[in-house]
Amino acid sequence: MSEDHIIVAQEGAVLEIRFNRPDKKNAVTNAMYGAMADAVASAQSDDSVRVVLFTSSGDYFSAGNDIKDFAAQSMGAFDGPRHVGRFLEEVIKAEKPIVAAVQGHAVGVGTTMLFQCDLVYVADHARLTMPFIDLGVVPENASSITVVERVGYTRAFALFGLGEPLSGKQAVEWGLANASLPAAEVEARARAAAQTLASKPPQSLRFTKKLMRDTQKLMARMQEEGEIFAERLRSPEAAAAFAAFLQKR
Image (tube, rainbow, N blue to C red; front, side):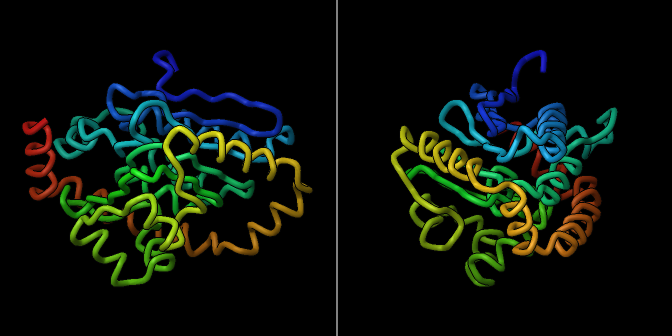
């Protein structure tokens, strides 16, 4: 990308995808979704890649979707193809392990994508939130399934309905993350785990992941969520929420 908001680099058999828009809290633009979708897809067919590692620069892992993109879609002023669906699809379909290093706060898709990862390492102080309802939309990335299955219905509804934050330590207690660490140690721990996975027999690893996940169910739910999400983007509730957010900012 011309502005390097997504940096893709390979070290050994680990392909790293780094959010690199720290001045905007790593909010994800359409172009960033496209770059990440391309990277995850290419990793699946590249025999030199065995593991995908998500990292980020700055204090946030990701503030979620760039609200300006949402607002433009709500007003019908968004031109060109949208890449978010392609990114979510590629992450769900990925047969190679995905590891995440969450060194800071995560919002929206920055949190829901973690439920599609195989190993997650998170900063103790991190706050993970999913404020879809507050924005007048609905959960995405099959999170209406993955969050409920991982943490249980009542906890999941509090995360979605009340917008309650999940701390890094809670993420471990509730089964979302493997370990919570001081922020400065998160990336190194995740990278070491990715390298360990990359040293394993690759086909055995891929088949094991495939057996553990119901990809068809996740894809079907993602598509159902996406249809409702698209409708909600054009709703008066969403338009009002986006306008209030942008004015407040």
